[in-house]
Image 1 (cartoon, rainbow, N blue to C red):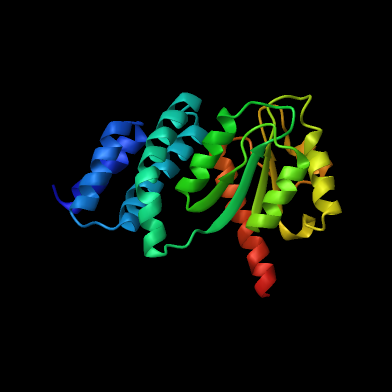
Image 2: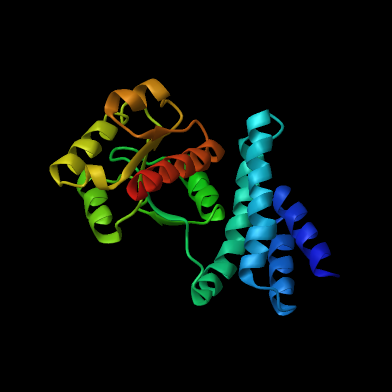
Length: 221
């Protein structure tokens, strides 16, 4: 199999969420001397971007996104340490967590996989994350973006509590705040003072890149 053929097969296997095939192809590529960046940026990421595009068009649904994401996550487990060795830079750092009072994490986990697949470093704080834990993580990791996830309407007010905690800690202006979850809307995100909102994992990555690009262009202007 040529390198181009392997990259095409890896793309196709990721697209349909064939986890075992993705792992086999990643390992085969590495054994053949292909760099982890080549596998990631020329096959895996384009495939996951196509998954997101198909979801937005209504051709794919959440189950398809989840299985593709899981296949990608398996590949990342192999590639992440190799990428670190090569010094490959992430495009940004994201601290992510489901807010206090909420234990739902499927949506958050899918967003995390999409972010990692797009080249972000993700620090996942898990579920039931209190405001002070977000503050501590931002202080420690100095992320570009912090993401608050809520699945329940009863826990959505924690977005505002978290933002207030960032203001009190003097961190609000240092980080882009993104919010999301099944009941969340753009109007609610605006009302609590978030910088960004996305309705799904694919849109979250695009919005994050947009917000980050804007902030960096302002910083260098």
